[in-house]
Amino acid sequence: MITQYPITTGFFNDIDRFVNQALGAAAPLSCRDAQCSVEERRDEENETDTTLGWNLRFELPGFKKDEVKLQIDDDFLNVLAKTEDEARSFLGEVKRRVRISDEVDTENISARLEDGILYLEIPRKVKAEPKSIVVE
Image: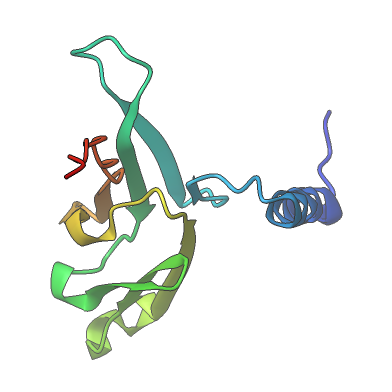
């Protein structure tokens, strides 16, 4: 029988996050919660190992799409789900923060809510093509 102590569930994740931030090795997206998952989208057509972006999945059971707000603030994507309905007041308020990096194209993020799950498609910024400058 394996027993998990409370200190092991969050303590090591916090240490890992601290070390990654201190050394500048932060992932483009970091999601350390069972109610959130991250998946990379790769360029399979051209058979390259290029990441096109990321898919995020948040569990928000019982919330409607007009009750979910998304906001990008500094290096974080903030998700806030809050209901004002008295009959569903037991849902309360759900807040999630996901760290994003400079590699994320924040202008083209798309979101949809289906069956209590918020799906986000986050594209990677397209790097500028090298261009030549004519010397006159």
